[in-house]
Image (cartoon, rainbow, N blue to C red; front, side, top):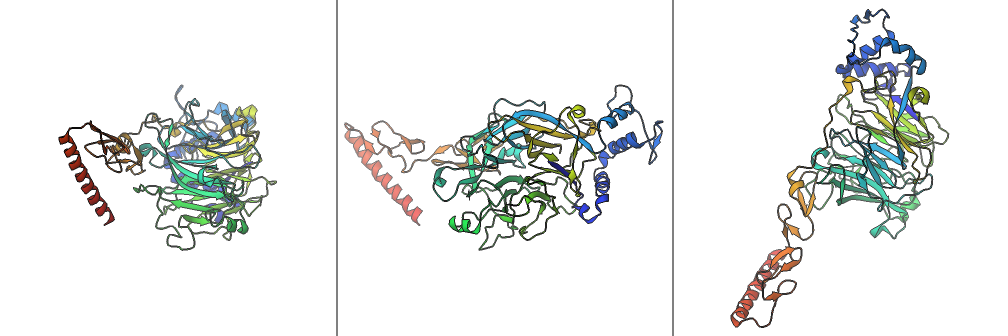
Length: 566
């Protein structure tokens, strides 16, 4: 099911009668976006104005476009046809892409290229170009690392992808997925939820360089439901990590010896750090920054089974951050709620923004606050759904009317798996008619208003071709990784400003040169790992020089050792 809740900023409709919430939301959107006022007047006049082509209230003179000229509203001759095909509150789910394998999310990178990145649960991310072409080579393929399952209700797999706000310059992206590898292979857990950082390839903007991986955090999980795992950046540039309770009980937590301190929490970290030892720092205004009994990463807690969360693009007048999440009302509960995530809140005891009606046991799936341009009627609404395949409208939770395939060209079919948003703020719905990961029944739909042009003139934005990374660090840091702020951190065995100098420990002797980490290129007459062995048959004067060099090397080594100890 899919639903729509009209919002005003901040959540003004809650304090008003339900019957007025929609009209207030639309009037507020006009005040906040004067550049779109013309289009709204055109649409109002088109449907409610006088048929003789005269003035339309409030005394707005309609000027019909010249023949062949682009128009932002539909002609009079089409009104009858539209009214017949679409009810007043109906929208269309326009099929954009099919043949996907268990899609879970769709995101954009914010670089102006208007590409969409579609996540498939098994561990693959594919690029959909603005021309609706799927690139043959995946943007990211980590299916060998990702642990997923074919069983219904099992949430393991690739969970989320978030691009750094400065992605266009630093090429950083963050991924969360479930796995069961390395040091976690033995223990009381079932799997781990891992959050990692990647960098886009220096050679092509359409592929990730998987060698650049850095692990941010790992969370042990006992069960395969209520995982969460969504990643998102707020306008403050901080990374938010939303985790479910994993259906963990107090007994489970005692058994896992504190490894699940993050479960049921919203974490907030700062990835813009120059530190080569740590992949993130803790913001000083986190509520538990100085706490001795709570992890400092926690921003809020008390969540159970969070669906997709969304940041409102249109911040309120005081610049506060608005994050809305759908969530289960309690452990093992099918009832849903909508939460506004705020600093330090405990949602085990905090009241929700809105309690959802029972939906026959279907789990609520979070969506997006519509701030797009194509539909003025939908502006300011929170679009969400549930896994039964159903979509709503208003805080007075009601199904969103979707037109039939006959009039819309396509219709939403199957279970809703997730929502997405493009660079222009338009909302997408991911659905699949089957639950098995191998099935290619996944589809991507775009939510459009049939009473408006698909891409109104005022909504068009110029395309910017994706560019290669051009920062100094990305060009010159060859034997290390770049931090999001542009510092080159050297891999083991390398040193220097851009990690170009190999390091040998112990140092090469007798004039040997360190060519690779811990690999010396020896001068003629010497051999060994550090060029410490003189070959037989050397002239006596060379032997003396060799002994002298050995004494000098030993003295230098002892001085270095002494300074290191001091």
